[in-house]
Amino acid sequence: MDSPHTTSELTTGSMRRAALALFVVAAIVYLSRLGGMPMYLASDEAIIANDAHAIATTARTLDGVFLPLFVYIPLSASWFMPYIYYWTAIWLQLLPFAEWSIRVPTAIIGLAGLLLAYRVARRLLGDRAQALIATAMLGCAPTYFILSRYALDYIYPIPFILGWLYCLLTGLERGRSPRWMFGAGLCLAAGFYSYIASMALMPVYFALTIAVLIALRRPRRDFAMMAAGFAIPMLFFAIWLLQHPDVVHTTAQRYGFAPGGGDSRPMDLVAIADRYWRFFHPDVLFLTGDTYLPFSTRTAGVFPFAGALLIALGVFAALGPARSPITLLLVAGFVSSPLPASLLDDPGAIRRAMGMLPFGALLAGLGAGQLARVSRVPYLKPLGYLAGLAAAVAGLGYLAWIFAGQSRISPTGLKVAAASIVLIAMAALADRLRHGRVLLIGVAAAIAMQFVVFQIEYHGEYRLRSAVWLNGNLRGAMLRLIEEHDKRPGSKIYFATFRNGLNYWDLKNRYLPLYWQFYVVKEQRPDLAADTVFMERNADIRTIPPGSIVLDNIEDPNLKLLYQTGATRIADIPEADREAFMTIVIR
Image (cartoon, rainbow, N blue to C red; front, side, top):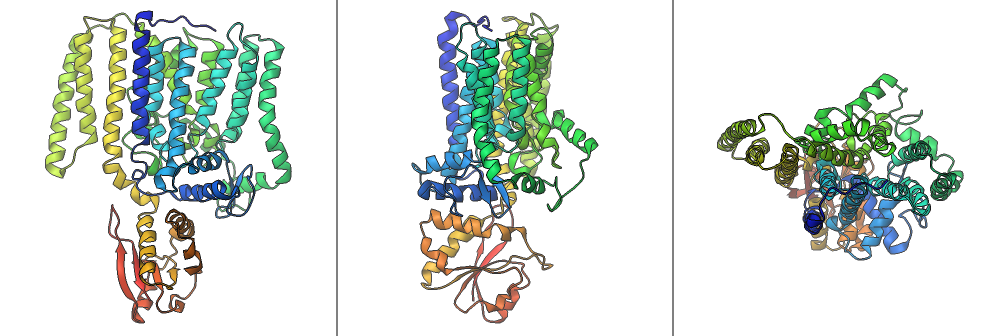
């Protein structure tokens, strides 16, 4: 399985330094401003953080279970995967409990994925430049970056997928110990516990590995070691499942596959097939990304747009000139990763199919090698200059027009202007290098420039657009409640039932207790638990005793009843993206 190294020895040192420098840059970008972007906590972040803190401090979950294999969440009557809880709990031994600190563990997982992607690509492709391209495709993937900054477990399967591939590639090399095959199986089975989709995907990847071993006519000991590595972690799940026999049915109910769930529905194979193909639509992969706004700016795809050519060439190479059981495994892994997500009525939810990203990045690295072999492209120089000048005029003109009319910088204008720089640079290099290398340099530069533009939007306009999807400024509300309580020692804090102007119950009511718990712990105020009351859904707001501090939403019709009895409105909670939604009154 050894691949010839096409990078010259003369450039090995510089390539290593470049890889190290790029990783340092990635670490800075991935770890910066974690407390402020995303602006607010997602509800699942608060759920996970509260139990992770409990495990870190007591070795038990909030409901008192000692170091469980899976964490049960009563709010959704479902089981959450364990790794994010224990990995976060480890970091909370070192870091204070805060929004930024609970996101650090996921960002570290994201960076670990980049290191592993480089190692796998080096072993697979045998070329440092191609390995850097593959790693850049993953690291600059907007979806990967966004999900690396939430305290959520969507990207947790990726290090296990890459670890499996590294062990497999190493184990297939001549003279290597069969223990690498054991490691490959172990990575897959350990990854089974990383994210719920992995419970279906890791056995699929295991079956694909067996197919590779059969195709390569590997000795029986490789099969045995692979199976042994896979079996050991799975044994713990089998024992746990015997102790919790209802988990399959309750999980099926949660996702609407069994009667009793709120969204039970028959299996529609046509709809499943349609959702499956949606994951491969160019619009999703390269232009808009995930369908859920907190996980996509909607102006950038799952992968960098410039990487579309590399992935296409990688698939071509894997099925054609570079065909082998390993390259076919990459294609099979790429196309099988969305299968579990396709079962859910959530089209384009790439967050549920993150296994696509490492396979897509490695295919892009393979495509980079294919592109670099192109010797000449007719009219590359004049076409490059012409397209570059046209893009410059269009991009700068659009930037000026949008700024003059809306006083903002257009991400689209920036992308087109950046593309003009790349095109003109490619034209300038056309007489100096093989045209395939010129194109590869241009694609790499375009990937980097798109990521820079994406960062500008991510930390700018998108920060405000995504805020409302993260339940708004509950942080400000919780901190202001604590402040007002401290001004009035002995007062009670009441959370009224949020209702809209038509008196309909607001979904935020489900999450108020867990957000309150998060900020009480963050502010180290356990004493407030005894002074806090969450009102029942249909409770009469007039039963709140005088002197109490009440949080409600401004348009709740019942709030007028308090004002009629002398309540005083003391603070509206400001929102970053709209008019105030919540208010605090004194009964």
